[in-house]
Image (cartoon, rainbow, N blue to C red; front, side, top):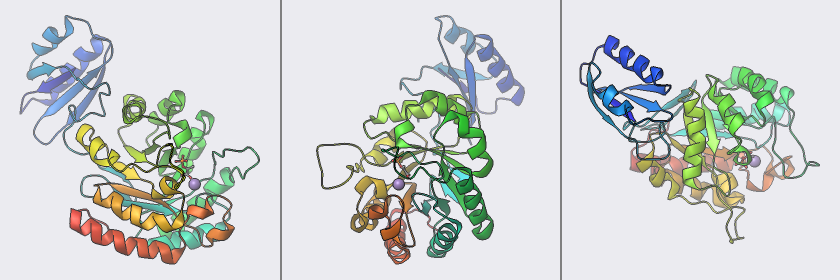
Length: 338
Ligand code: PEP
Ligand code: MN
């Protein structure tokens, strides 16, 4: 249910309604809008609750939330959410560009990449320290050493750092170094992990599972939101289809579809979405045209020798060219790309 407060409801009345909702055993998620405050009441409903809440002081009306995802839905919050982490702003008019290597390999590679992407206009640095690899015999990442290198690159360039957390047991460690916690495609439905990152104060980039529906993606986001963390970005990174010309199929209708249903910003990953360097820049531009609020792109100083995903990584020149193209599209669709 959504408890819609009257315009000009006092802070005391809002606090009172939060207490009333909690007395019913529901969780209260207040959303302070420019016009008025609404409080999403989430949990198991009883028949008498609606009438009782509706008679509270300062309440305009109580309406049911129809979407299966609640806190993520536009019904609860009409204004788009802007997720902020240091140099990175994603959402509404802000287009965030997160770039960097698939894996953190060493300090030299990471710092060189951070400098190059910053010069080209990226607003955050990505890089995996804990890598989810299909084979246990592939490079698994530098783990905590990788996190230290990311922190050094942030120190050097001022770029916010986005990195994946693979397991519940690593959340505290990764959150100590990262500005944004990335939940990888393979972990989209690891619900205990989602709750654990939901308990942190770090923004989360939640990637769509390759076989997950968009409703499942929104319900996964709901786990994070319901645990108290409202800074969630959704990420389309391509899905499994019968098609083999690309590594995954990158459905860009995801972006406007999600924008209609959720206030959360939508990021697109054209690197994993295509799996081929020559396709990345055009699909990044197409993502911006579709209304994406952010891009996450793999960039490596020497893709041929990358320890992971070199075949889909851009070198520095290719990234610069991608940014030039995306800037023109961003301009045309009214997005700010710094
Ligand atoms: C990555 O970003 O390097 C990654 C492993 O992505 P995904 O979880 O989308 O496969
Ligand atoms: Mn990768």
